[in-house]
Amino acid sequence: MAVELFIYKMGDFMESAQVIRWLVSEGEQVEQHQPVLEVMTDKVAAELESPASGVLKGIREGVTAGATVPVGEVVAFIAKVDENVPVLPPLPTTPQAEPIAVQHEVPIAGEASQVRASPIARRVARELGVDLGQVRGSGPEGRIREEDVRMHAQSVKPGRGFAPAVMAAGVDRVPSVTASSRGLPATPAPGPEDRSLVLTPVQKVTGQRMTVSFQTVPQFTLTTNVDMTNAIELRDERSGFLQPGGRRLSITCVLVKAVAAALKSYPRGNCSFAGDRIILYGRVNINVAIGTNDGVVAPVIRDADRKSLEDLERELSTYQNKAREMRFAPEDLSGGTFTLSNLGMYEVDRFEAIINPPQGAILATGRIVPTPVASLDGSIVLRPILAMSLTVDHRAMDGVHGAQLLTEIKRRLEQAPFPDLQSERVP
Image 1 (spheres, one colour):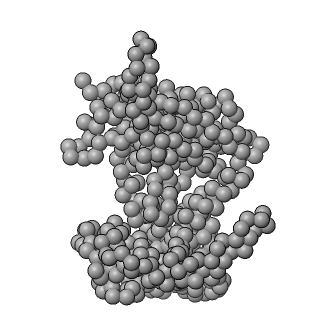
Image 2: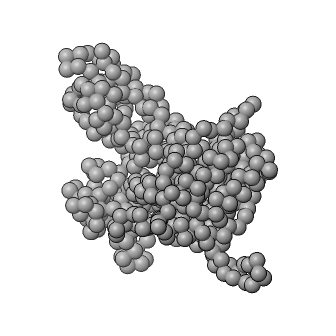
C-alpha cells in the first residue's frame, strides 16, 4: 500500500513550509529516511525524509519551488514499482514567494552555473548584489559561504549602491503604509538613497511571536549582579579537558550549566502557564539564543542538567555551526522549557528579553565588567561582575518565585564549581 509523503510539523509554531526543491524526481527509487524534498520552515531550511522505501510517485501539482504548503498536506506517495497511487488535487493557489536560492537554480547575472555555494550565501549575494562568479570560496572544495560573500561585498568600491539586490528581491518600489487605527504615522515613501530588506522566514516568525508575547503575556523583569570570579576560574580550569587546539569553554556554556543546576534544584522555575494550571517540567531543556544574519534561532540543549561542561560546549559548538547555514533538525528547535539569551560577546552591559512563549521565563545576560567592589575588610577590589535580568510570566510565577529562581542562579555562579563537578576537578 502506498505511503503518504506529507508536510509534517517541524516546530512548535510551524503552520506551513515553502518548497525549495525536490531532491528526487518522479519515478525514482528511494530508501526509507532518504531526504526527498527540501523546504524552508518558519525557522530554518529542512529536508523532508521518505517515510518508507519504494518509488516516489504522484507528486502533487503545484508543489514546486516557491510554493507554500500547509502542515498536513500530502505532496506525493512512496509506492511499489507497479502500484498505482491516487491523483492528488492541485495545491490551492496562493501567492508564491520568490523561490529560495539553491545551488542548482538559475544563476544570477554573471554567475557560472557550476559555482558551489551554500543556499544562504546565494541569498545574501542577491541581497547585496554580489556576482558569485567573482567570489572566492573558503569552504570545502572551494564552496562559497556567507562570510565569503560579505567580505567580497565589503572589498568592492563604495558607491555602487544596492539596486541590483533590491531589484532581485522584487522590492525596488515599496508602497507607503497607511496609518494604523492607533493613529501611528504612515511609513514614509523610500527615497533614492533608501533600500528595502525582505524579512527572512525566521525574522517574520520571530516578530510575530514576540509581538504576541509582549501583547498577551503579563511579564515583569528582575535584575541582579553576579560576581563571576569563581565561574571564570572554573571555565579556565575546565578548558584543559578539551582536546588540544580546540576552543576553550565559553561563558555561555557556564551559564547554561548554572541555569540547568538552578532549575533542577528549584523546579518551580521550570514551568509554563496553561490556562487553568501551571505545568512544571520534569526535564531541563534549555533554549540558547544564537544570532545569525537571518535572525535569531534558539536551539535546545536537552537534559542540560545531566551534561558536563565539556558536553555542553561541544553541543553549543555544533549548533553554532548549524546556524551558519540555518540547517537544523526539527528536534533541535522544539521542546525547550527555559531560554537563555547572552549578549555579553557584543559588549552589551544589561538588557531585558521578551519571553519565548509558552515558557514561563527567560534569562538575559550581558558582558562581564571589572567593577570596584567593597570587600569584607573594607578595602576596594576589582571583581568581574555580570548583570543578569530574569523576565517572568506573571501568570506562571509571582515576584517571589522569580526572585528565588534568580537568586539560585546567582548562587550557583558565585559558588562555582557546581556540586556535580566536584569529583571532576583538576588535581
